[in-house]
Structures are given as C-alpha cells and as structure tokens.
Image (cartoon, rainbow, N blue to C red; front, top):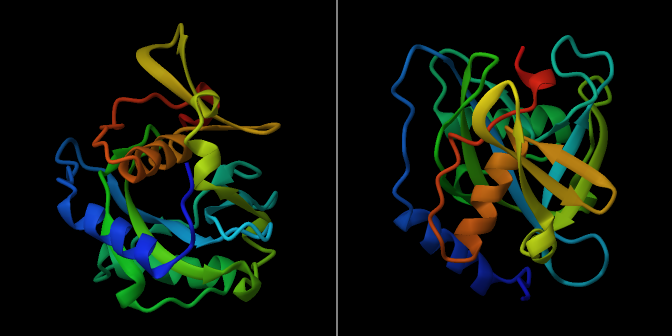
Length: 208
C-alpha cells in the first residue's frame, strides 16, 4: 500500500475526516487537551506520507522522555484546533493555518486526567521544523505505509486492567497509549475503517 504525499491524497484524507462520526468524551470531568496528527512528506525521499512523533524533553515535569504527539492542554477560550496548532508552533516551530486542519478524531480519556482530541493536519515538509529543546528531545517521522503493516500493532493484557493494552512496533521503537491509540485510529481512518480506541489501555507507567 502506498500513501503518496500529494494533493489527491490530502483531499482523500480530508473527505474521510469530514465523514468521520467523532465521539466526544462526556464522562466525569477531565481537562481538555489537543494533539496534532501532523501529516508531512516522509524525510527519506520516498514521496510517501508520514506523521510526526516526538520524544519529550527529559526536563519536563510530566511524562518526561516519553513518545508523544505535539500538543497539550487547551487554554481558556481556545478551540481544540487553535490549541493544537498553538502547541505545534510552540514545540516544533511549525506554523499552520486553520485551513490545514483536515478534521478531528475521537476524544481519548487518559488515566492522568485529560480528554485528548486528536487533530489531523496537513503539515508540509519536515525541513520547516525548528524543535524547542525545552519541550522536545527529538523528532521522528514514521510513514503511514509502515503503520499499515500487520506487525505494526500488537494488543496485550496486563494484570492491572481488563482493557487491552495497545503497542505500536515501529522498528526498534515501541509506542504505547495514549499516543499509540490515536495513531492507530489514524491508521484505520486511512484504510477506510472506523475503529474506536477509547477503551485501549495505557501502560501502568503512564497512569499518573
């Protein structure tokens, strides 16, 4: 399967996002947050579409060193889209207009007290990135055709929960929820499937 970084593919994803029946979290009060599933041209010269993940800086108070999508808590008065694009700009120096937002997928409630809204955005080239070292330790591009492979996603059980634990296997990198759950839903969207992910479990180290 190939997902070329072209205007035609952008239009295809925008159409899929527009038709996506988003589920908004309505349970016990959680803090609203937004992250960006930023679609960019792969940095390997393949012409394929990729998405951006970061490793959080070691000095951060919460979830230091963990894999993450660019994003964070919504400020008062911000829409989800505004918050996501602000965080993308602050973390990676990538300043996208609202017109580059293609859609919003399902809210994911975390055990650490957030309802995360994943914003799908068309991001251009990784050459435009300027990571903020206070927030980002490293930036990584993963191609969509890589997460489409059968061995890219695994589900496990843990004694602490009856919910399935999701893990993304990207080469030597293992990525867990919430990031893995949101990327998995993007993968399913790209494949033309609607798959809910709010019940996919996080590893115990991410519960706080």
